[in-house]
Image 1 (cartoon, rainbow, N blue to C red):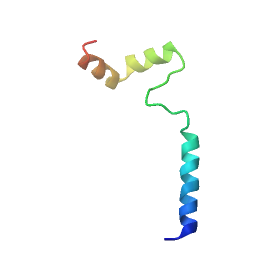
Image 2 (image 1 turned 90 degrees about the vertical axis):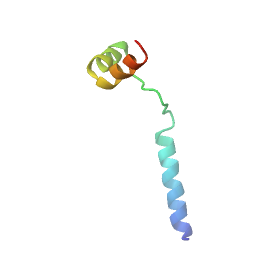
Image 3 (image 1 turned 30 degrees about the horizontal axis):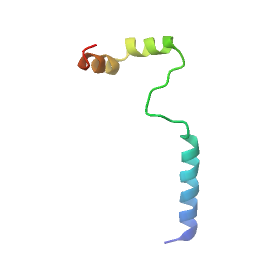
Image 4 (image 1 turned 90 degrees about the horizontal axis):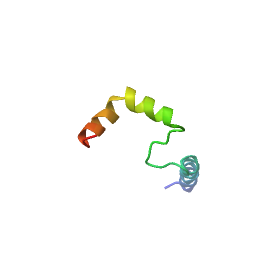
Length: 54
C-alpha cells in the first residue's frame, strides 16, 4: 500500500471532520418562522407528526 496515498486520505478525512465539526443530527432552523414554513409546506414532517398522533 502506498504510504503517500494513506497520508493524503487521512488529510482529506481531517478536512471533512473539520467541516462537519458542529454538525448534529437535528435540523437546526434559525427562527420559528423557518420552522413553521418547513412544517407547513413539507409532506415528510406532516407524516411524522401524524404517526406520532399530533
